[in-house]
Amino acid sequence: MSSKKAKKKNEASSSDGGIGGDSIVADCGRNRSNCGYCKSPTRSSITHGLWTESLTVNDYQALLDRGWRRSGCFLYKPKMHKTCCPSYTIRLKASDFVPSKEQQRVRRRLERFLDGELDVTPKERTESPDVSFSGEVSESVRKPLGSAKRGQDYEVEPVVKDFSEQIDNAAQRCVQSEEFPSNIQIPKASVKKVPSAKRKKLAEGSEEILYTSNIAFQIVAAIKHAQTSEKSEQNNNAEENRLSPETVSEKLLSSMNKLGVFTGFSVKVCKGHINFLSATRGVTSSDREGNSLFATATKSSSNNLHARKRKLEMHLKRSSFDPEEYELYRRYQLRVHNDKPESISEASYKRFLVDTPLIEVPPSGYDGEKKVPPCGLGSFHQQYRVDDRLIAVGVIDILPKCLSSKYLFWDPDFASLSLGNYSALQEIDWVKQNQAHCSSLEYYYLGYYIHSCNKMRYKAAYRPSELLCPLRYQWVPFEVAKPLLDKKPYSILSDLTEVSPSSSSLQASEILVDSTSEVEDMEQKDTDDDDEEMYSSDEDSDSSRNRSDITNILISLNGRRFRYKDIRQIKNLAVRKQLESMLVTYRKVVGVELSEKMVYELR
Image (cartoon, rainbow, N blue to C red):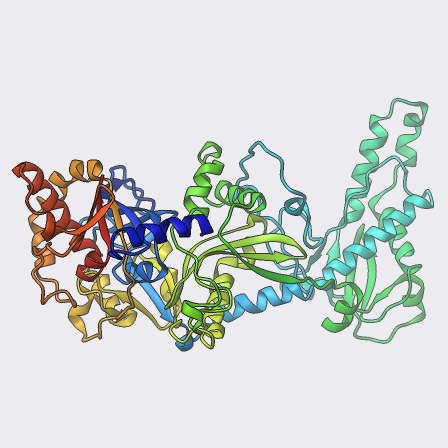
């Protein structure tokens, strides 16, 4: 927050006698929208909403623990018994986290990629269609990683890469020596692993064919295309000068022999194919004349020959607009979520992932006390870079009790690295590491868990996790909640167990309400009988207080702040009823404690 903005807030606080704090929000009532999970054709997703201008990290932590989340500066909370896909806040105590075998594999896979043992490439266009869009792409996005061929999405063994490079080098030597025409584009060699079922059928003596390449046929086709397209006298002799696959493969083998002798595999040609065999017998004189041997018998020797280590860097920065991040987000939304190009504007990106109401807390903490991590508290973007190329961005909030994961977008070319899972593991580790700086920082919040949506169930794989009961706001172990959710999407989870309600430290806050939009929504919002029944049975920490008692709610009117009990003499009865109805609903959705620490402004 700028010094000018902070000064303005401090002046406001002093002018009203110190009532209220730094959080400024505006109630926008109940919202209906199309659901992105069940894809219902009707506006079946129903939430409460608050627009925020600024919000303290303590206030937002308290709202999280009542089922709220943020999208940019908009706070929303599902109307659980009404919405189509009930969404439960899910969290994990970082120190208790036990990674599954699959999560361990994700970590090892990325480590192998960084060690140069694994190359990853874009998915086939049929699997993940690319949608073109206008605008320049930065050099960092164009920069390739690895040397595997386009159109694959699987692990490329180092030995396969070695063989391919040896064949490519041999082909270039044949062009330089004029054994191949110089006017053709030599295709890149493709070496494939021979399935174990076919190895014995193709075996020669005690050797088995492990890898093979048909590059000779591709080179012959390229030569034929070049010769038949030429309109010269040389075309008359094209047939007699044309090379066969058998001849091309022999020339390539001879050229590879000149590159040097290695041990580990023997190489032979057969009917135009270049075959790489296991060298399990002694090398004879005929072998020396007709075969080359490649030292790739062990993983370490292959790595020493061609492996290129990569460097992963993670940069944590305050939330701000970055053109490079926006370009990556745009590509992600187009290719992974198939969004329309016109829907991914710079303005919509800023509203969703850059704008934040959270007031920054510097690393020095509160009054110099050691209560915050070295980065401070607030909204951040965690960049993941490999060799300086941006491959993923995690949008997170760091709060007094937790790291709250908001969104992750990544380079679609590297989907096989499971960057979503990897980033979650990194964020859990971050919480563990920073507990030494902030003892209250214990939890990792994964957003909403939606049991009725299969693609959202992955969050429960981070164990042991807890779900927030939508009625009593108590945390319930997932294993306890699951049987209830298996029966119906909306359940009062705390009915099955005794759980201690979560406590949170709250700062005073102020709330500015858009009274026009609130009045328009109130008639529909508070006529639900089941709403009244639901909240009247609430057994959380507010149950000892009368829920219709709104006298202590803070109101801001004409720049001044009051308790509602101090301004109850409203002459217009209809206006008073509308206002009181609004305040009752507001108190229900944010809780008694927050409603009395925040300010509800009438404009």
